[in-house]
Length: 69
Image (tube, rainbow, N blue to C red; front, side, top):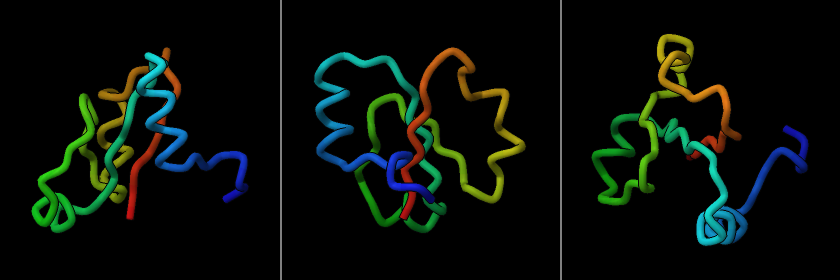
């Protein structure tokens, strides 16, 4: 993946604090969700292998940030 399509956690935090309007898709697997008590505010949880089945849940009018491990 090209580097210009990636953002760091620091950059994401800055954008969130600045009030930027985007949607976060948490594509970690369910085991990773179970092992973590952290969920980004308003993140949509969708396993990467089920993304196509959930496309209707993803707003079309916002930038998308995918969170994965």
